[in-house]
Length: 128
Image (tube, rainbow, N blue to C red):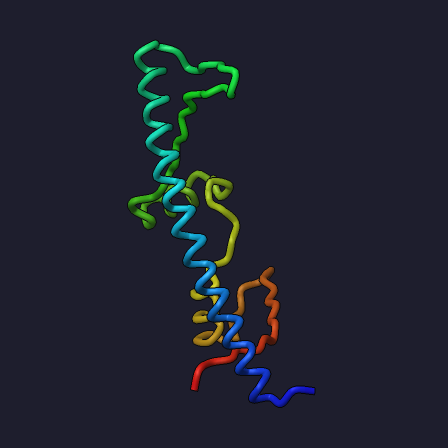
């Protein structure tokens, strides 16, 4: 078995290499995304000029598809409205990890009902 020092050294080397590869990958993906955006804009312009919502070619079919995103600009007002209208299904069902941790630390005797925690023990290796 390798020494703990050697295992830490190998782990850090692998993590550093992974970081380099991730950065290189993200840069390449970002460049491809830029190029695809230029092509998408050209397709959108062509379909707008022709007043069509789709164009079929031998290489594929391009569609104009609206995408609407909704977001709250006043969470207090939105939250009050959700409660008043019993429209809780308009809010995504997820727990804010950082806020929940803070709540439980400051209110250890008042945990919210229906919440479960799962803790995983991991090993972290840092540079000295």
